[in-house]
Amino acid sequence: MRCYATALALAAVATFTHGHPTQAAGTAGTAKSERPTARGTEFATLLGGSSPDDSYGPPIGHPGPNGSNGTLYCPDGQRGDINEEHGDVTFENGGWTFRGDARVSSKASWNLLGGYIAFDMDVTGVAPEVNTNLYTSSTSQPNCGERCYCDIQKSPSGKPSCMEMDFVENNGRCAMATTIHTFATDGTPNNPNCDRWGCSSGLGLPSNGKFHVHAALDLDGTLLLTLDGQVNNNWNVAPSQQSNTVVVKTMGSIGAAIVSSQWFGWAPAEGQCPSGDKSGLAASVFRVSNVRVQGTVMQGPEPSKC
Image 1 (tube, rainbow, N blue to C red):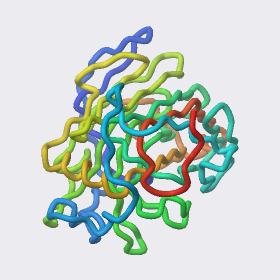
Image 2: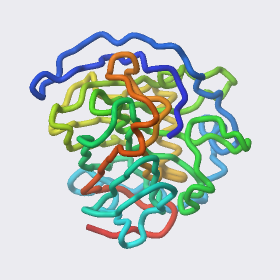
Image 3: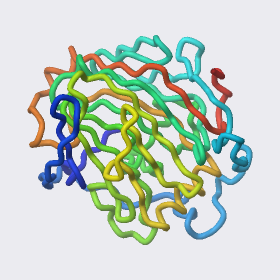
């Protein structure tokens, strides 16, 4: 997720003392670049009526008896469910390990409304200021791999941007941020901290560098993030009704593919975490494991069920 944006003015940047968060006020950094103005017809129509992508996949399902939509999947790179886009990637333990600059993406996309994504992260081997993450990209070609990659950033080739939901974006072992990036459809530039409709929420990371994340979307498109079983309203991303409308229509038309990467160039809470340089990236090791997805497959091959 090449987010060359300002250091996030986090609504609440927390640091952990013996594994417990303590609040610290966040401050805005110097912008490296701005979030892009929305472009492309793929998402520009989402607020104005039917989407050109309405033909993708089945309609939104009904919540099951447990309140969740869809089927429980365990996407597995060893079974061919994940695109190895670039870098040194090892598929293991129901997830992946990156050594140096690397990225993977799921071959399927899901409607996550009423569902969730859950996973374990291990950043014990991550170098300072290296960005490690797990997010979704709402692309119309999830099975295409790196050649068709897109996120909220303006594409150099002129391709439309894609809705991006950053469940976890880390700065080394220091801090993380959660952000929903939707679109401005009237030509107004997006706020680089998130977008003009959404917001970001940040917190520190557990001192042992290992944690479990559960990211759930309700049927209205609001994200609830739980870290190691802890729920705090400051961590939740609850955009306006306009942004929720984009999330709901996008999920119901093309869904969202999982993306995860490790890279250097921008990370949340810059200036508040230990500094590093690009030379540390090569030896940086980042692990994601036990990935679970509760949702309805909208595009791509059906991944492995749990």
